[in-house]
Image (cartoon, rainbow over the protein chains, first blue to last red):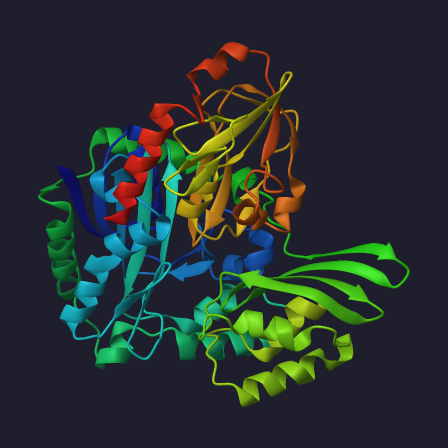
Length: 347
Length: 141
C-alpha cells in the first residue's frame, strides 16, 4: 500500500527534502504539502547563476534550491499545493512512455480542477491547461534510484511580480515581457474562480482522485528514518558545489567553416521554453535552419513553417519575416513572440 | 539486424534491460540509448555528458538526460573509465532521437572486465524480445 503523507504547510526545505529522501529509502509515497515560506527552485540541468537573480534573492531572504527534477526555475510559496508521488519503477502505473506516464498520473489533478469548477485538461507532454489554453499547473519528473518521482502543484494564487523579480534577465524590458507573458499565459484558481480555495477544497478531492488511481493509501507520518535521511540530504543540497553546479551552457557557438560560411548553434531561454536554432550561414544567408525546443506551438508545425519562411533569407530580413508571419497566420506560441524566434536565430 | 515490435536492434550490439546499447571494440565500450529507449523517452532536450577520467561501476546511474521536464538516468552497462562523451549532444541532443545507434551515441568507457558483457542481452536473445514486447504492452495501456 502506498503511504500518504498529508503534511499541509511544512518548512520550505522539507517541501523538497522528503520526496528526495523516499526513493533513497526504497519507499513509495504520495506527499501533499506546501512550503510555509517562499523559495526559488531550479531544475536539475540548470545553471543557477544563469537563471536566478541571486542578489535579489539575498536581499529579500529568498532561499534557493536545486531539485533533481527537470524543468525551469520557479518561485514556490504557500499559495501553491504540491503533490509529490514516488513510485517504484516496477509499479504497474509507472510503465510506458513518458507522455503516457504523465497523462495517466496527472489525471487526478485534472479531475481535481474539474471538481473545483475549472475546465482543465491534460496537454501532452506534461501540461495542465484551462479550456482557454492557459497553464494552471507546473509538473516535472525524475528517476532516482529505482523510483520515478512525479511532482506538481495546484496553483491557488501566484505571486507573478516576485516570480519575475527572482529570474535573471538581460534587462528590465525583458523583465516586463516575462511579467506580461506570465500573467497572460499562467492562470490560478483564484483568477479562474474569483476567490481563494481553502486547503481542504484542494487537498480532499486531490487525495480522493489519487486514491481512485493508486488504490488504498495508508495515512502516514514522517518516520524517524525519513527524517534522518532528509536531514542528511540537507547538507548535500544546500552545498554551494551542488547549487552552483555548471550544467548546460545557454550560449552560442559559431563554427567557421570557410570565409563566408559559418555553422551557427544558438540556445535561448524564452519565457515559453528553451529554444534551439542550428543553421548554416553562407554569405549572410540562412540555410538548413533547424528549430527545436520545449516550447508549445499551435499548430504544432509553427517551427517547421518558420524554418521554411526563413530558408535562404538574409539575416537582416529575419525580424521582418517573423513579424509578417505572425501577422498573417493564426498561431499560438505562449511565452514565445516573433522577437524570441529572432533572438534564438540571430543570437 | 533484429526487429522487435517495429524497433531495430543491430546484431553486433549488447543490450541492457534499461534500453541502453553497448558496442565493444577491444576494451572500448561505446554506449547509447536504443531506438526503443529513445521512443519511450520522447524528444530529448538535454544530455548531461559526464567528464572523461571518471570511473563508473556497472549499473551505476552515471549520466542524465531531460525530456518533457523529466530527468532520466543512464546506467552504465559495464564498469569502466569514461574516455570520451559525445559533446555534440549538448547542442544537438535530438541526435539521440534521430540516430540512436550512430551520431546519438552517449559515451565511451574503457572496460577491463569482459565478463560483465555476459550479463547483457543480444539482439537475437529471446529475453530481449520478451522484454521489449512486455514493455510495449505496458505502455499501450
